[in-house]
Length: 490
Image (cartoon, rainbow, N blue to C red):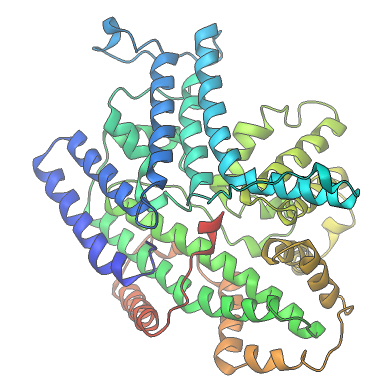
């Protein structure tokens, strides 16, 4: 089930909100959270009911590890206040074991289901390259990637790590914790909600008309961005990346269209997730901050997918040493984090290269410093250079495999093969509808108001704009069938 569907918008969501507010009025907190957990498992298991078993297992492991870490599993600790670990304090052997079990369990689930096929295929390819096909692994098992496993494993792990560090208190009630892990608004495509960010909201949060109204505007704006901008740009990108040969202009146009598709697709999902959270009293953090206005790759990662950037920084980069060691160690840490960030997105060498390019640019910008010749360029030049670098990296993100990515980059550089069929792509991608949509997407990317800021104060003019956009999105949603949230596959 996806947000941009009639089933979700006009059946699932109204029933969930009706049940939630009925329980909010007449039942205790645990009943609300049990209800949210139930409907979240239904939402998650809609495509494959077996997927929820993995999430339930991960949730159980982290729940008990959290209680074990603070010594709240024994009979004498089942009542009373949950102990809290002090920041910077010494940790016992049992606490370290509990954290180890939590992290290993989540990473093992993620590693097996996301990288098993990739590992076997990479090994077989390497054996074939060296002429030792007899060492190839014949396997009959092909693993299906569960939706959202990259997101909820990171989210669940943050609970154990925050408790271990003393940044949060463990949860005694099972339904409260299960609700935090499985909450359907951000379950399958983020944003990654760290436990310390919502710990207090789990126990007490406000439900106001202003919050609910702002949530509705987030949902309306998100749906409009998804259906009116991301999907048409995705059609252009699919035509270009699926073509056997492209002219240079067509290759650039397709890459630009994909850059807008992935931005508006993912930011739309984040907007709708934030809006759904607001409707149930939760305040989730902003996940995008106009990333294509960035003047460097460093700034890009301060604006793009903020929940992942901060997660990698706080739970991986800083524990590795961050920038506290030598310059060489800092550059190595940056590369390591971005390579792992690339693999987190998908089991493919394309994603490794994508992460490696970003890591290399982050290291280069740190080496170059703030007083370089690049820093003295006009802001518009720095924005253009940054966007072009990002554009080439998106090619590796979108292409089906490494040879396809290299061929596409070659076409962008004028090295593509000229065939009689290449000009035919232009007839499909330069229609007035598609060309104007890509143009409007560019205007919104560089000059538009962010949803976060647009919804701070809502008056009748904004209500009219949002209603018009929402109504247009619904009409297009009914009339067309191409509405995938592409970040579901990551």
